[in-house]
Amino acid sequence: MIDDALIAFEGVTKTYPGAGRAAISGLDFRIPRGAILTLVGPSGCGKTTTMKMVNRLIEPSSGRISLDGKDVSKVDATALRRSIGYVIQQVGLFPHHTISQNVAAVPRLLGWDKRRTHDRVAELLDLVGVPMSDFGDRYPAQLSGGQAQRVGVARALAANPDVLLMDEPFGAIDPITRVELQGELLRLQREMHKTILFVTHDIDEAVKMGDRIAVFDSNATLAQYDTPDAVLARPASDFVRRFVGDGAALQRLKLRRISDVPLVDFADASADAPRIAGSSTLHQALDALLHSHADHVVVTAVDGGRPVGTLSFDRLRLALREAEGAEREVAR
Amino acid sequence: MTFWEFLFSRGDDFVELGGQHILIVGASLVLATIVGVGLAMLVYRAPAFRELTLAVASVIFTIPSFALLVLLISPLGLSTVNVLVVLTLYGVLPILRNAVVGLRGTDPAALESAKGIGLTPAQQFWNVRVPLAWPVILAGLRVASLMLIAIATLGYTVLGPGYGEFIFTGLYRVGTPVALNLVIAGLLGVVLVGVLSEALFTILRRLTVPQSLS
Ligand SMILES: Nc1ncnc2c1ncn2[C@@H]1O[C@H](COP(=O)(O)OP(=O)(O)O)[C@@H](O)[C@H]1O
Ligand SMILES: [Mg+2]
Image (cartoon, rainbow over all chains, first blue to last red; front, side, top):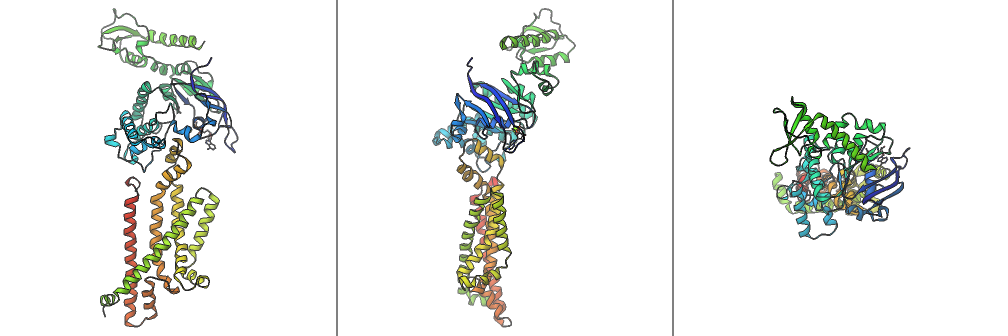
């Protein structure tokens, strides 16, 4: 089957000169066009190495990486990098350039004219919530960590690349801002449909951000490549099971919305049952259930709050099982 | 004769020596910058060469300047060129050292992203590394300038230009009424040139270093 993969790793191995063992070995996977692949694993398992081979910051020792069907080793490295967005944990804005100049970096390298560059920078800074009118003339040192990384994302998007590489982009940001930025990246992605390779060491973040997850083993191999739900429901090895940790079922509840599961008629709903909107996740429904005396929640329509059904503990459990069954069907 | 009367009577000399002092220091500073920054650019990434170059520059720096001036009399004679060479040699060390520190100290994240978004190696160097190192390089020039202004006075021992003439003439005439005035005039001149240097470097810094880096 030829799927519509934008990035493909074929038998890729990287051994650093002088290193006793490979930093990553026998990598074979594809990233579908328009999907976010999260690369997750313990520190030192080769995530950064893998990511940097895509834009040739690191050259593989063997194997092939292709982008849109073209072997990246045949593409001029500088041109390749200009066509791929790059975001790192340390942000790496140019401290001597203003925010606007930072975002304009790649368009300038590509020789865009002033007008077009300016308009694009203004558009992007608006999009990431650091408007040009307030922040354009500031310097990076004058931004908070969260704002700086927003600008980092804007810079990566400036020339409208198809592919984004993000290496623990929110790893150095406080938890509250991190959740905000994760949400905003997902919101942007719904409109952009970029192909994103997103590196993280945090399984929760991997589950939240990824359409697919690649779990790397501590011995530098790919342990599992699957949907987040499948990784949580059916870890491929003891390593993955341990890495996913406790609470896999709870995590899975976060992946599903109430409106995705069949509800029971609300006719005999009890009066003290909590109400919750159909757009909430099953996780939020469970939380509401645990907080109340009732054994079910009343689900309301996404618009307006009219009750549309009820959801009980049993139903929640069933929903997870059914999801697993459905996954199996798809897998076949 | 009070000092001020003396200074007034020798006003023309004072201004002329000042001009000479500034010229010899300025010229050797330019040469030392070319050599120091140039060497730094060549060696900052190669540990062995870097250490060797810094060691050589340090050894030159430890030779007493007076001795070096005398040493160079046989090849270069009693001349301005002799002073120019000595000042240049002395100026290299602080400039080289700061340039190496600056070029090596560039924020690794900025360089990493510069490479990652597709700057060519030359662009990474000239558009990111050098501008970020510039405040440190400039600080080296500033120190070197002050140092050379002071050392330049010794140049008169090989009949070089500048305020050394006042100071050494005063020294030769110790005991005469004019001696102290000569020495003080020389010192005043050197201090004024020093203040001028500080002022120039302050302005240069304002003009060339973005506020975010200072
Ligand atoms: N430039 C390098 N030279 C030598 N070894 C390296 C280099 N970069 C990474 N490594 C080694 O390769 C392994 C994988 O590193 P990395 O890809 O950075 O892991 P991760 O991003 O998952 O933490 C580690 O053992 C690391 O020490
Ligand atoms: Mg890493």
